Image (cartoon, rainbow, N blue to C red; front, side):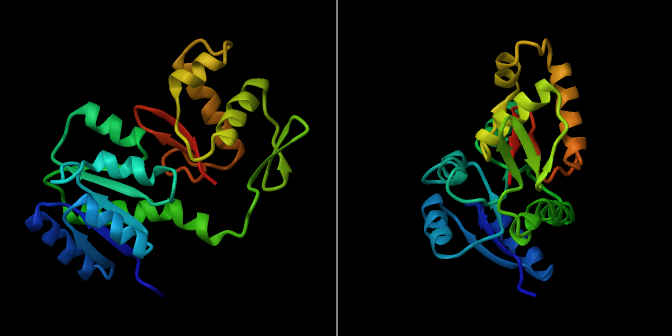
Amino acid sequence: MDKLRLLIVDDDETAAGWMHTYLEACRFDVKSVYTITDAIATIKQTEYQILLLDLSLPDFTGFDLLKKIKNSIALPVIIISAHSDTPSKVKAFKYGASDYMVKPIDLEELEARIWALMGRYSDIKTEDEKNIFEMKNNFIFFKQEMLDLTALEFEILSMLIINKHQTISRELLAKSLSSISSHRSLDHHIKNIRKKIGDNGNYAKYLKTEYGVGYKLYF
């Protein structure tokens, strides 16, 4: 079995070195770079399964790299940053980050988060399913089976399908659906949709929560 390829982007060479050494010992194929410019060049040359990204780099910010790759490649990103403030976390998730850890990090926890994240993404590459979600004649089919949806569930899922891989904010969903009067009722409908597609809310395979931002359908 091929090793999972991880790319570390962090200008703190000491911190990057600790992560690099530990993760190689865990039998990952690890490469470290120290600028966003080098990261972009490296990503163009090699396919990676996980990106470990600091936010403060000498040439550009981690946000710049997130924005650049968000709509071009399906690369899970774990932010590893000294920024512990909520706005930085929300911005990172808004730009496509999959997870966020605040320095100093525990390396065993990092390994666990990597495996958890790969569990959510690996099945996307291994399943031979070109049309997991399909919209036909005002019905939505999931793996070729028609879903029994309420009108509001249909509206929510339709919006997510049309904007797949894009995060739709909770505010936009609530605003677009006049019958939904609160975020609590939106949560109820999201929960019901997840049940109908067999998604686990904590480790959702398709309908993912971008914490503090909204929801994204990935297939």
